[in-house]
Image (cartoon, rainbow, N blue to C red; front, top):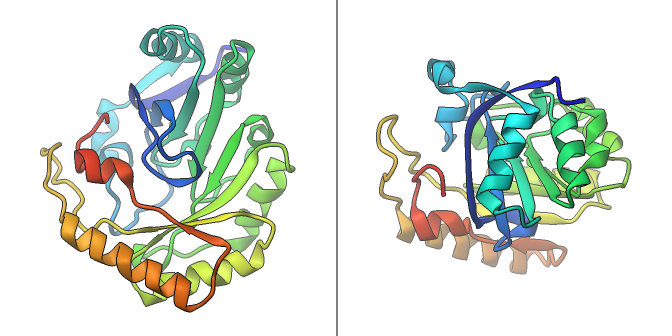
Length: 242
């Protein structure tokens, strides 16, 4: 059960979840290394770009879990599995181990890789990437991810929105999955330089984009959509490990 090896970019916390359906909740993050996407505005290149591959540690499930328990002081909380794309890693045994100790698990993925262990999560955040990312959505694969969840975890859609095209994309995808709650957040145009973990964020620009997004949702009477900030960006900018 614990023989899987997981490529880990970083493990950190406890801190709070900065976005989406679990915003504000105390969390330990397990960020995996590797991704099948290359979004133009990615703010976690240290967990995505292959030039950082040497920084990713191959870790056994027992070692990952020991780090989570140490950070949380053995008190169960939510463990957020992120990346990169964490769905490309063998995370099923880790989820089983942690749930046995009373911890909860949330995973965020773009929905390009479906796993049967999605059904063992507490929260599955599907965040398909809009046109501004430069990536294209394979809806057959996204359908598979929804099917793999099988209604067991809380499954939601989350969209990063930079402009009108992104907003229109989010509305179209939401119409395809009418049973899933929807969360929108303004995009952050200032990813950190490769060697600068404290890059300054254009907070005024982000908040202006959020005000624009709120107006769009209200004007369109899209009352099923939640509009939220990236709270961690407002608090800590683009620093790693927070």
